[in-house]
Length: 196
Image 1: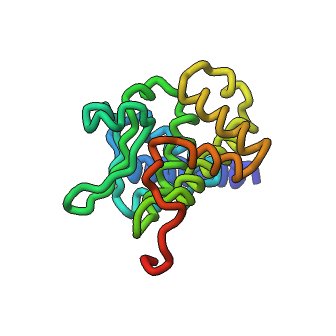
Image 2: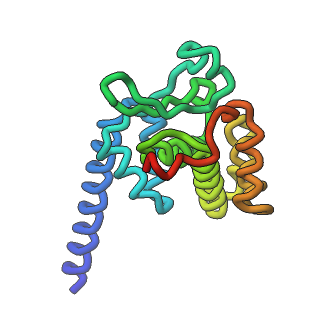
């Protein structure tokens, strides 16, 4: 009996290790950056496996870059979802967040992944949903590790601010914040129903 139990435990460990290797290979297909791969693992481990699978299925490439070099308009951006002329999709995370905790990067990816399901273009409603998804993920991940909130990294400060606004006042507070952000000034409130 003891030998059978030992065999079952060994089999379980092998299966879990194989799953980790499969997940790692999938993550490597969309990013070569180990820290981003770890952030994807954190997303997956905290109930966002469908989000990660969508990123992998759509082959959305994720990388750190200097957003200000792409355009001066992106100087204050934390990340950017984009498509190239061949319709390849990307998530660019600004280099200033290379030193952020992987959990904060995972929250930022929860935000940017929201944009990857858009067919007809951005809107205030979509940005609001992306910010809410980011806040909800940060709340979830810090519930299991509250010490994360004490990290002074600017991305953690952003996550704490979003989570506090969302936690105290809900979606409306996030929508007000998004609508007042000059980066989104030219976005429509929502995509017209005729475009859907």
